[in-house]
Length: 288
Ligand code: NDP
Image (tube, rainbow, N blue to C red):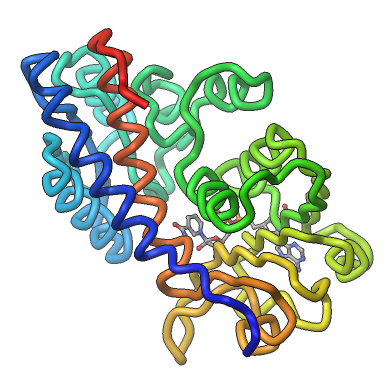
């Protein structure tokens, strides 16, 4: 292996510590803590783990965590009514509805019900529109975390060739929009792309959000490329990413491991988005 490891776990811990330092000033100015409401419907074990860690890290940062656990057969109307109550609750700055939702619930109907000003996941179409038009809004946590790791590693990204693999609304599309805003030349590839390795061969930056274990091969990469692996795939061999780590690490300049790369960034950015939401909602300026 010649690539340097990008330590997302350490970066995320530093980010959470900086957020925790900013909370007391907010409490003093607003007379309350920033508040994050997390809604979990059903018993999905992976979701339950995420929700527990979000609650713990929210409290560790000095913020208020409001956890709402609803049974799997909760009617959509009840979930929408809860979102309405949280939208109206002045103690709640951010609302996160944990995905996936049970099949009988229309995910878009719920996500679009969240007030865009409390949409700390950045999934509301209003925030997606703000991102592509360059307006201030909330950006989805995982791609924003990837961008932070890239800028920490590379500094100014202007003019670099970037390939994003995957076009989901949660990762791929917002990642491409963020890199475009940073003046990268962005290529977004997906399952219908012909000859995917052709595009990767020129990429200074590769962000893989495919959902397929070991998908990206080392010999597809430009030597020295910076590789961000968003994938979280549960296999018999444990958690693995979308990048074939061993072959990629012998070609790339730097690479995120799985676990310990992008994963820890997601919650840290969620806390940052909640802190920003709290300042905006309370009309308190956020120190840089
Ligand atoms: P989706 O399944 O929504 O999207 C996957 C994308 O990959 C699609 O755009 C799909 O193309 C593309 N794709 C699938 N197969 C191929 C292929 N053979 N060649 C090229 N492109 C392909 O996944 P998500 O974006 O939600 O997640 C991606 C990965 O990131 C998953 O492993 C997920 O677990 C992980 N993840 C990690 C997070 C974290 O916190 N670290 C947060 C969110 C996700 P098409 O559109 O044509 O179908």
